Image (cartoon, rainbow, N blue to C red):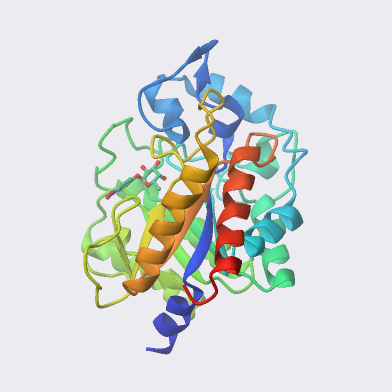
Length: 308
Ligand code: JFZ
């Protein structure tokens, strides 16, 4: 249909994992946390809620620059941006009335970066989407490395309220990237239904489960061996071991990394898919130089090979 066709034309987008965890950068109490993705550090290092809140309170985000991020995405040849509005830690990176556990109420920054980014995407002609975790350790999900527990009924009002806020206060949304948990069919229909009602043009991914999505999310960095029918997307990460910022990440070989990701992008595009490549900015909002270089390199390659 027209909605998924428009979404398919976007082809290449920027994924952004950014939250309180970015401020920690994969380090807790002076030690690198080597288990798990760094955006899940609260669980892997078993950080008490009160300590995590203290980290939140200190978030200044004074180098978060939506105009520069959008310009970088465009340089890379991307047509849309998807940011983590809320990850498994349950900390909302947007202004919400459902809780005070959000960036406007609980940080030194005090602004709504999702709104600033949404507005800038519109200004620069990029599509804008949100990642939204159905796992929420703050609202009642237990820490669980599997993260595939059902959504407790008690969480529904918060999820629904937050979805209504995101689907009504941020202009046109191109996609909603639900992540993890195992909602019931009724829950999936309810959550996807809010998106459908308020944002008829937004494509919903398949991690809402129960076949209620508009496009399939493949495995991380997955390039299918053959062309695939239907509507699908490959989420890709630069390092594979983390999506959120990791301060102790070794700088990898730049030309090799650009080559690998160009192969991913070209392979996914040629097989009919959509490629969503992630960056993990630091807590202050700045983009890691290596990641900037990788994105610019991918853009340069495409300019040297138009039509590829
Ligand atoms: C999920 C999150 O748990 C993770 O922190 C990150 O946000 C990532 C983009 O999404 O992790 C997954 C979930 C499913 C798969 C891979 C990573 N999968 O099916 O291949």
